[in-house]
Length: 175
Image (cartoon, rainbow, N blue to C red; front, side):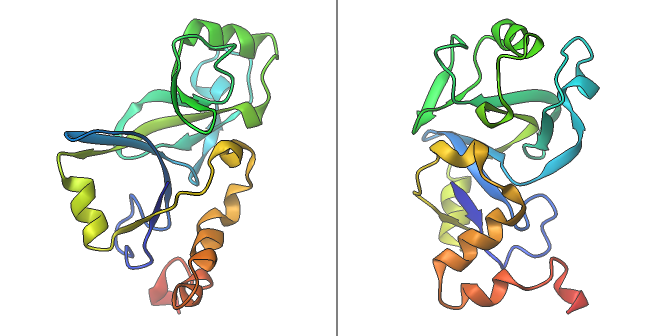
């Protein structure tokens, strides 16, 4: 996971974000913001799917596309495991059928509009310039974690001067 450093104050796309990195190659990186719920559900976007699961903002790229991560590869074929039993994508028709039959729980799948993406060396440079720090915490439970305080919890866990930022207002000009 990528944790936005507190100094990313003026970046509306990534301020206080936690990103699940789903792909990292020498030429690009892809991930989804875990802690930005949107005010819409799957059914709002896809009326043919009878599902009230919340949609999250995945990032600023291709926000017209719906993506998903899950922990049920045995039910959704063609998934790509990204670690700790968490998978990215898969057969959407299978997913749709499972949702319409009520066979999935909200802590088994998460939907995102858009994704976060970086070109060659871009993410490496952002980490080097302290825009992000990398958390190697297990990610299996991330779909069932309360995301309302996720960034704050990760910052507190980092310790030291980071603890000061944990309780700072989102807009520091209001402080």
